[in-house]
Image 1: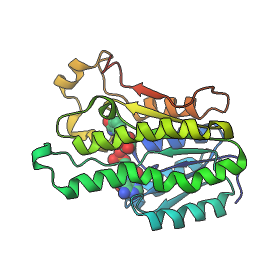
Image 2: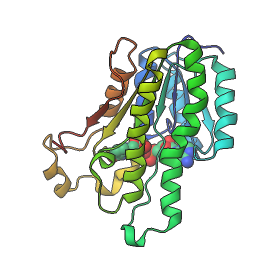
Image 3: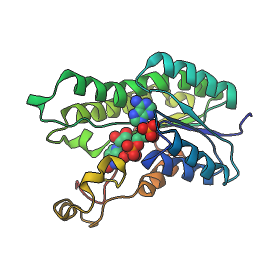
Length: 243
Ligand code: NAP
């Protein structure tokens, strides 16, 4: 199955990644999504994507494992022949106060949320450079811009993604590859289920609600648009949480 335009979304089986996959499919993109373990969720998302009359395939691998990433990206390129949009979205949290944070929690988050972007983007950029077109969107967080108690590992990884975004934007602009980041605030997904409907949290958000995965998908769709003259930016989508 060769594609006319393909979007690759890591962690595209659930939550924000799934909403991005569906939004881009509605714009006519074929979808390659990745996930780590929840095959049931991935299969359900693939069914929903196929119902939109696009080609869609799920790839199961650990984004923090360089060898697995290389093998799977190679397969995606063989399967679809091109990659127009990459959303580096897969991510985890392992929260703890810094004084109690063991190296396992530190490394798991840095490897899954930051090193993964290096592993995935490297082979994808080679394809985009040959095509002379591409859009890369890195899923950062407001925590990467402003820090957060109990999230030194997560904030470091998400801040790292911002530096990665700006550097690649400068390096790849001449090849017509745009690189941007999104910094979501609190978005209702499995990752934040413990925060759902917290009155304390809602007091901090001018729009008085948590965001939805679709709120983030709208921003991804906008930044993926081939007509956008935007690169190297961090778009905060947080209901005004940080103004
Ligand atoms: P989620 O609902 O927990 O979904 C996470 C996705 O990433 C799943 O598809 C999961 O696959 C995949 N994944 C996790 N670890 C992986 C690994 N090692 N290898 C491959 N895939 C892996 O998370 P979410 O809330 O949608 O968050 C998506 C992104 O947005 C993350 O980068 C997160 O940090 C960022 N973000 C979220 C919020 C928020 O409030 N939710 C705010 C700011 C930023 P399985 O289903 O197989 O586990």
